[in-house]
Image (cartoon, rainbow, N blue to C red; front, side, top):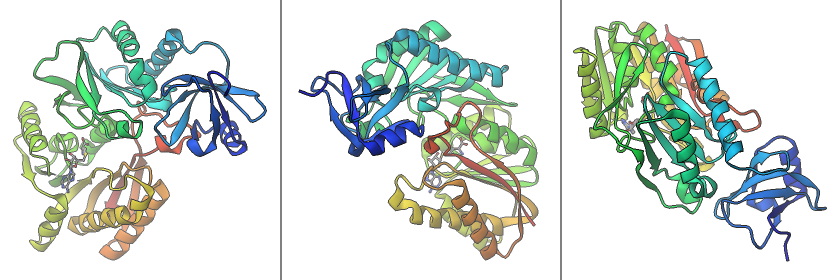
Length: 390
Ligand code: SAH
């Protein structure tokens, strides 16, 4: 009979745990109590039965244990409420004038398997672990009490749910959802479709970078992989003309609506594959003063890194070639499998091949509402470089 409510981990696992990594993989779990279910909070012990802390257990995932505490004692509603409040306190301090931000960024906010995005009076939530899925109603109650939102939307239709043995799902969990929800980024107002938009409805991690992009809007601007136009609209505030390239038809329609809402008649939407668009634009001899590249993750796992890097290089090389001398390239990558050093090395190669000299003006990441947890590199996934192409 295995010890009730506990998970015993190997020496290698103990080493990881003590080094602060909040994940213990299945290979490093030696035994779990017979009564332990996926989603339980378990006591973590070493081979001799010494207590190491508490973690959220997953039966299906390769990541068996996710750190919750170094200490003993109940992990209950009061603990989750305190973590939620601490997470929101950071956002309120950093974004005192805003009402759209990521409230909870999973383990980086000590709430593994939970993502909460706030768009004004509306919340969009992802339950990405059996532990948070099972406590869904508890989190809905806590969020409703803390924010008094008009609605809470469940966007647990993310692929990672399947790795946890959960089926993707979405729907309204609380309140009523109007047809259009809006939020502000700097001087721009964006519409977000919380039920049908990508991910939680919008890519809030790029919000500070969107606003920063407005400083570089001039002449002819190009925003590739535009989604709802987060970058395109900011560029449009200052540029003569912006071309927003996006492959999804519903996203293209959203860019058009957002441009109209903000009175920006200078945003042209091109519904196309950005790889083809960049190649054709070069063939046609077109030139731009500012280019933004913000593609989806090209590498979902380690095996895809080489192909992803080739993809990044292709678009960055073409963007550099398309820029007029002195032009700005804002280039992002959201895959943690390609670390910042590797991303910069890829840019070295693209600059060399483009026969242009390129300066790094700024290295940016996700906004402060997407904190990075030391010990968990996966939380440092977004790179966004501002380059000047001479
Ligand atoms: N730049 C956006 C987020 C981009 S997410 C923002 O800041 O809000 C990536 C986007 O690229 C998605 O909208 C997706 O539909 C689009 N996309 C994916 N593959 C594409 C391709 N080959 N060409 C153009 N767009 C693509």
